[in-house]
Image (cartoon, rainbow, N blue to C red; front, side):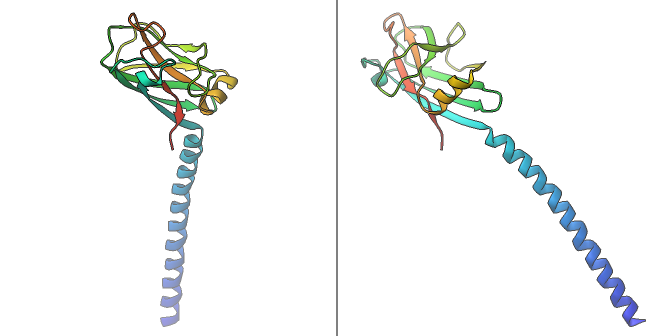
Length: 159
């Protein structure tokens, strides 16, 4: 009788451990799926400053651009905020490809009106995505006083 109880307890313990292993395994599968999705996402950002303009200007304006690129779909989403411009933003864009300190043509215009705390999104070409992730795009906000750009920042992958 004692051997049957021990065998029953051992069977129940084995069953419990097996059930826990299965449940834990399911949890790990979810994490793996999430990890795969996040592996396709690249976070980028920049600080917009007048000193980054080429040539630099004396504006005291500042700003930020935070973006996320889905490498699988090439969908870029961005959020912009700024303060202290010399007047209303007349236009803004991502420019590229260009190294820090170099100028380039417009790669992606932002929708008008350009306002602080604006958001946007666009689907890039594979070549544009590669340039962006390589740090070869910059964000630029223009005003009437600074038609070439009042504040600028090079988009860089966040670590």
